[in-house]
Amino acid sequence: MMDDFPPKAAIKKPGSRKKAPLPDSGTGSTRSSIPRPKSSGDDDAKTKKSSRKKNSLPDDLLGSDFGGDKQDRKSQDGKPDIGTRDSLLMKAPSAKEEVFEWINKARMMPPLFAKFVEHEMRFFTGSSLEKKKPGRKTVKTKEGSAALRELIQFLETATPSKNLERNTGLEYVAQEYAMKICTEKKVPSKALQQKCLDKFGKSTGVVKCVVLDTSEPSGLEVILSFLVDDGVKERPHRQILLDEKMKVLGIGIDGDPHDTRKDKCVLFLAEAFEYNGQEGVKLDSEDDLLARLATIGVK
Image (cartoon, rainbow, N blue to C red; front, top):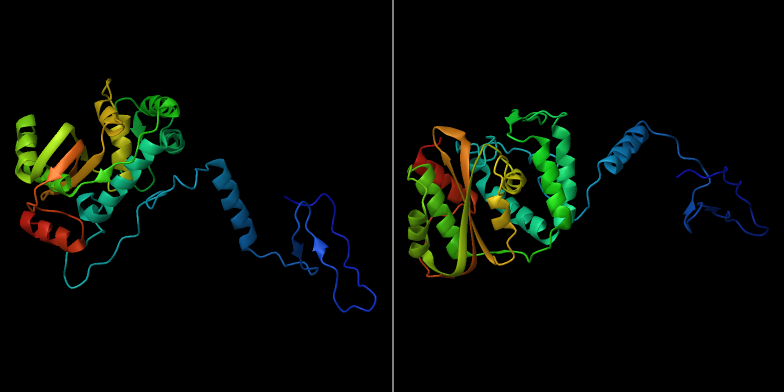
């Protein structure tokens, strides 16, 4: 904020070589008596600051992928361009971390997460059902911004839940199920879910599975899609993700080798799961991802 009046000139005290510091209005800080020349970047900084205030979000809500996708990396040694294809599968290791991060933010701070949903509203125009993000393909929705408004109202009064913890066994379960229904073309079913669960351990209490077909390359977009539950009146995905009974989580991501823009994200949530030590496929590192891509024929 600018001072109401120009600062008084510096006063030289008798017998002293130092100049009295100029007070900064409203604070106890000092500043140089020599005015700083205005640089060309000052206006840009003010514009950015003003813009941030207008569309501000809480600092503890901002995540690694807020404001756009991470910068793509170049391929090396002839390997597939990990991170350069606009696909959730091609960014699986980091996307899984983002999914985990954002689901817990939605559970632990629902009113603050609602602020991001408000921020997302700007990609809809009026009553249009199309979501238009700069540099991204237009997404056709069934409810448009109305679904976002409904989610905002829900989150503003929702009771916070404790954070989920990732479970090794459920990670293998989720990845196994994702591979079977995506690349192996198995029909999704409760029986197939149970088969995957039995392979890697034993669950206690309630276990739920949610699956999302997505072309979004961001973990944040995945969680937002689950919570919005566009076109589904009962919002079952939202209820499962925010269920306070759920304590542990497994995340699986797989894709179609013939169309890397149609990926699946699978989440298994449970009250408890005892891992039996059986190893499976995981996508927690670039090496894991490269091995999976070689299996499904992505070059």
